[in-house]
Image (cartoon, rainbow, N blue to C red; front, side, top):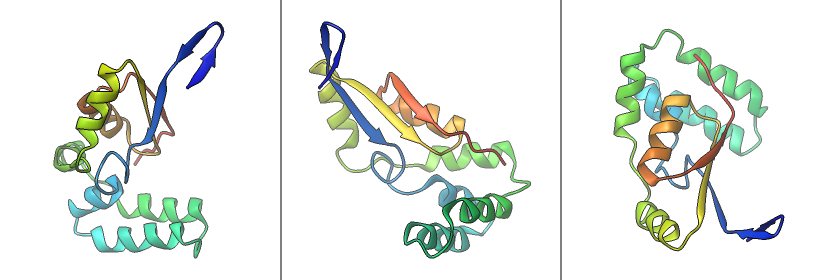
Length: 129
């Protein structure tokens, strides 16, 4: 619990991708243009520290240039939540917790994910194609 002035506010903070959502949005998005495996390999290399994270992100985004808004929204609709994620979030909300999600993903993916779990707040580093 975090103290805010005189009030004690219970806050639960979750990463959107890989914690609430089962997988990474860029990989799902890359499936729209047949580049999922290539994007996945770059993501994993960045996580392992084999390539600079920012460089890897730029390379992944470059592979997705030209993707349509319709394709991006279709990929968003295919995102699945981790088993139990929605139930956990619902229970925390009933118990008075504020849900906060974070991501480096795209705005519409972030908004859709927050709406599905009922998160009130979030931190997002914007990504653009």
